[in-house]
Amino acid sequence: MTRTKFAVLGGGAWGLALARLLNENGHNVSVWEHNPEFARLLIETHSNPNLLKGIVLPESILFSNNLEQILSPDTHHIIFATPAQFLRQTLRQAAPTICRLQGLESAINVAKGIEEHSMMRMSEILDEELPCDLSNKIVCLSGPSHAEEVARQIPTAVVIAGRNEELLFKLQTLFSNPYFRMYRSDDLIGVEIGGAVKNIIAIAAGIIDGLGYGDNTKGALVTRGLVEIQRLGIALGAKPETFLGLSGIGDLYTTASSLHSRNRFVGYEIGKGRQLSEILASMPAVAEGVTTTRSVLALSRKQGIEMPITEQVYEVLFNNKFPKLAISELMTRSLKSE
Image (tube, rainbow, N blue to C red):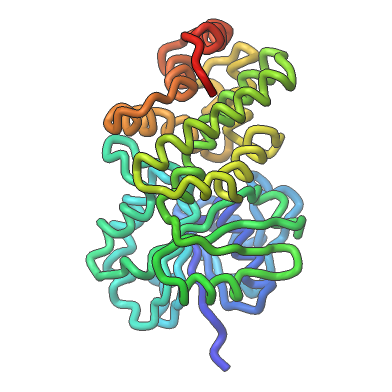
């Protein structure tokens, strides 16, 4: 029997964790890493302690810096695990090879963000950059899923969204195991917006923690942050109930509260008084929420949607606004009904 072949484009923490998971599930897995130094480390040691400390990946996973080697003719599913702002660049490199794949069943995006300038969701970029018609094969995997925990087999539940119910059901069976449970959704817009905008709220949550504020403040932030996420999602055509699920409140709660969260870390350090440029330079991985703050604010203005928390996070990140002043302005806005 032919084993299902997954190609993972992106050797970051999440790409590596998913590669390990799929390998454990009995699938044939290969990983493309664009950074030659990281690629060499993975090939020689089957690990990257900069990203997943203490995790050694199985010898049966193929690692390479060569896209054509990873996107072999027998590839059934491609996982796009590059940071959101690099997805288009990766697609332009890979598109000619992808469109030659005769047996390709799905294009799975796992990055969480909104592209700067275009204000496009990741599925829209996939649709635009792949010259072959893969619209019905594009899906998004999202939810509360820190790579560090999935790689250690800690019970995790996620959601996969797309337009093809039969494909979603098949992917559920391929990914799910005793520690990784996958739900399915037909609300691609809602799942993508929830995954992207929660990173902005996580930055705000980190700022609150860095300032030494308490649970009351965090509870208010997460609640009103969810309102902003839902408000934007509905304006773009999402279903309201999606934001009460794993890709909405589930991912928001996890990212806003966890020490694993890179976005919360950025906010925490800002709350402690560090400069954004210094913080980002010290991080081995990308905090998607920083650039997404710019993208989402522009998108909200285009849609005529009020997102006061996002606006204040933008001011703190890019205009050096004092975090305490930002919170004060949020607290003293005109009073209204909930």
